[in-house]
Length: 438
Image (cartoon, rainbow, N blue to C red):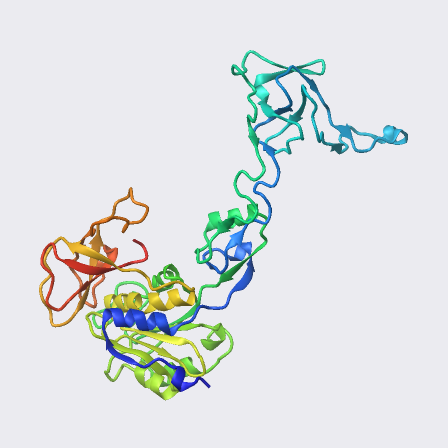
């Protein structure tokens, strides 16, 4: 059983920053695992990767041509067959393996291909179009550049890219294809990672249509087509999606019973269950009752802002999964996901609290009865390494169509603006929470 004294106190009617802080503090980094390279895309690197050998680990040719020693002309040294037993000459086909030329004396040369091992003593590589072989001799032709070959021409020295002990990949990096290719080049077969936390979605609602234009009284599903991808952008991995009606018994069962097979929630080994809808207090809202009946501990109980105030974050008993309850209205749900889900998923990956930034508003926002989260469009500088890499506050435009049930403004946004109850004048500043596609 989880020690109740170790559970964080419930934060009721949390401010936007209290909600983020409480969610981030609630989770611990997941243990690291070693995975094959082809399974690490998108995972978080758990340890620095250092060079075990120089990179590249041998001096190689950057061109097809000849490895040469000296300024020429050069005697061409030809590789010899590995098998030199005269008794077997009758069986030779001309395609037998040969022993490469390992070293060159002064004014000697040997043919080499791009990436080939440069023999000891070689001072340069002469590119193929600049040389001509005649009777075992290599000479420069009329295409050769004046002074060619210069010492070191077209030789990639060992250790040019990295020395032994250099940090090649830094812990905390979200692994992309370039990281994985680099790891392979350095000789890695597996990498230590913190896998994305596994997430199960419980999409509730009797009035939801999954396709087409809904009839009056019904609504189109705004979560199924995008929430798995949204969660993935925030660092999670949705393994299962379940659709439920507004039924207390079914919801409680899904949260508590370890079913088997395709309909299982707990068998997915989720660290987080995200629900949509049912967080309010109406007769059709059952999440709070289901959590109370299950013995779950509330970490955040409602938000002191609009939209998204009915949202909650809880932990199931016995160190069970976290439960993030998102409101049923789309913008309210997306706002709550950014305040509670993003910090929680960051903590699972061992990352810090996602950053916010102060922005200057391009138009006035009127006072309201509470703090508001408004979709905003923040200006960025494409020349900067990061959109916030500047000394002065970037500007941001508050967007219209920002009701809890509206997605038009959010579809154009790259930040959520935290607007205090007293409003913000034109040119005034506000906190912006960057969306993951900024």
